[in-house]
Structure formats: C-alpha cells, structure tokens
Image 1 (cartoon, rainbow, N blue to C red):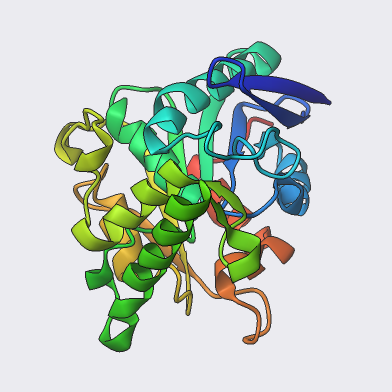
Image 2 (cartoon, rainbow, N blue to C red):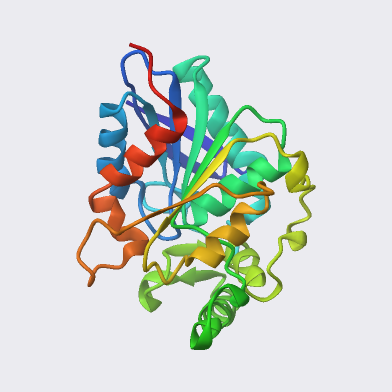
Length: 277
C-alpha cells in the first residue's frame, strides 16, 4: 500500500510505502541514510512485519521515488525535516494505523533527524531507535580519522555551493542532495553541536522520549564515540547496544546490516518488550 506525503508547500511529493502487521501495537517509521533509497529497506520492513510491527518506509524529499530533485529552486535542511517532514509522516502513520505507538527507526542521517525531533519534542509519545548513526564531530574519531568528516564536509559544501545541490553519486557519497541539508550536516563536523539549526532543543535530563541506539562494530562511519555523542542529545545515560556486522568484513558495516537485519530487529524487539499473545 502506498500513500503520498506533500512537503515544503507541496513542492516535494514523497511516496510512503506501508506494511501492515496483524494486531500490531507499534508502527516503525524507517528514516533512511543519506543517499540510500527507501527500497533498500524492503528486507528490513519484511523482517519487522514478521516480528509483528507495522512499518512505513519513505525517501527523503527529492531522493529516488520522490520528486523534484533538489536544486537552486528546490532546497531544504535539517530544520524543515524536523519541523515539517516528520510531523507529517507521523500524522500519516496515525491515519493509517490508528493509535499504535510510533517508533522512529533512523539509519545514519535518519538517526540524526529522529534524535533531533525527540530533542525538540521532549514530551512526545514517540520512541527513537538509531542504527549506525552518530554525531559527526571530528573529535569522535581518532588519529587520521579526525580528518574524515571535516574533509568530506568541505568538499560537499563546495560542490553544493557551486552547483546548487550535491552530486553525491558522482563522488561516492550520498545522492542528489539539497545544499542546505549538506551545509547543516557539515557544520556539525566542526562544531559538534546543532545550534546552527535554530531549533529549541530540550536538555537531555528533562527529555522523556525513550530511545535506543545500536552501534555496528567496526563501523568507521559511526564509531561508538560518535553514537554516544548523538545519544547524549536526548539521554543523560545513553542506552547503546553494540552488534557485530552480520556480513563479511569486506562489506561496509554502516549499511551492510540491511542485507541481514535480523540481529537489529531482535535487539529492537527485546527493547520494546514482548508483543501481546
């Protein structure tokens, strides 16, 4: 089943695929990584449905099935995703799945946006699960790894400033990305905080949103220190689970888990608790 979400005054049309499960208490809203199409989360969705959860998957505005593509004319950033895109997605989930408990399941960039939503809405009834995600401040890496995110941020912002968007496919990082999104992403690499977004973020001790963060071992794109740095935005004492990559070592753990998501789903299911008989 497919519905459509309108974003940015109707400028972007974002198809949303819905996977219902019989008698589900929770609805998992899957928020993808940068440049990863929603269709790559199909296996994850099927395993989640098999575990008894409703699932929604969608692309970020202007990605894959969503149109138009970001450009000088069509642009957005983190704040618009937190303040408009996610509330509309949550409303769509409620419309289709009634009064089930919504869970934001964010992968990489999706984890950033889900965590920021929780920080901006500390009394929300949503739950947050972040997988292979983290605060990209350079200090969360060691040695030469400290150069990783700042150098990528500089390149991405330069290209986006010249072209009006990031041609991620050409450089092997992301997709056809909005320039404001990449600017927002890149500033965190240097500052380690999100103050530039202009969002009112509640202090972690006052946040009532339940959250779980799953770090994949040997994930150089989201090492443990990075995951902890993001989790601390909404948790004074972060709940972080580490899982081994379910795929061979030559496959990047950051996204390879999508090919065998059973371990992540089992971890999530244990955290959410048993389903009713």
